[in-house]
Length: 238
Ligand SMILES: C[S@@+](CC[C@H](N)C(=O)[O-])C[C@H]1O[C@@H](n2cnc3c(N)ncnc32)[C@H](O)[C@@H]1O
Image 1 (cartoon, rainbow, N blue to C red):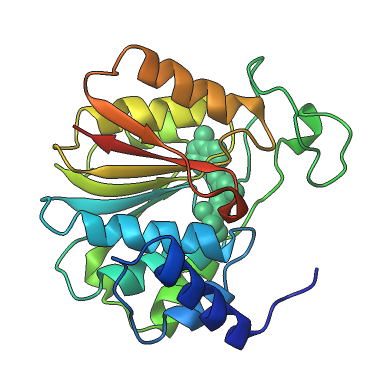
Image 2: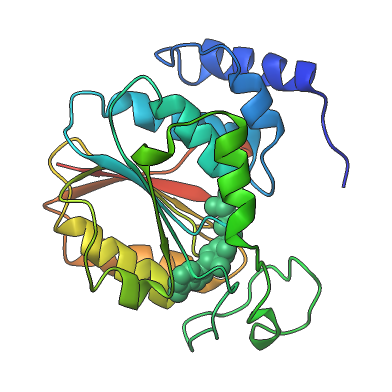
């Protein structure tokens, strides 16, 4: 894979701040975090940063659902460092589960030929995310790593009493549905969710979001990013 240079990341951020999100405040070191993202575009990373800044007035913690090796966790951690928010990280650390019937393959990203073949892929050990957070000296007493399948980890405490921002990156229908339904009961007006892979890889991500919104239009707004930023969506509690 061709990696862009860190100076190109700085240039991209400057373009986004000039033409897409002028309200995004700069942060020293963000370019390095964006440069280290894996499988997440610089544009999507910037939308994550903007969403985190936009919930400053909203009480609650920050969650990432689907962490893998923790490249986005590192970015999120640095963005929330000046606050006192806790970072909740949810992952099986066993990779993707078995897909459901709603997980129709729309982009064969690894060239595996079928959706079923993706079960168990994207597996990363928990140590990698811990190492990334230690590397940036993020206070580990502000981190909760909830290891296991999401239907189990959200069913039992500990979990955050309130969430101000969540990044949902589970790829498949069932876990995204579980996370969104749980978040619906834990987010106050103004709180924001970014759901990755809306209309990309598995149709299940978009189906989970569309079904979630279908019965909650009174409570959530829906926004898509500018096209070059990639395939994800932003939900905000009304
Ligand atoms: C695309 S990766 C996450 C990438 C990460 N957010 C990043 O930007 O670097 C998806 C992750 O979701 C996790 N995952 C998928 N389904 C899950 C489930 N039902 N419960 C817990 N973790 C799950 C996988 O183990 C995998 O690490």
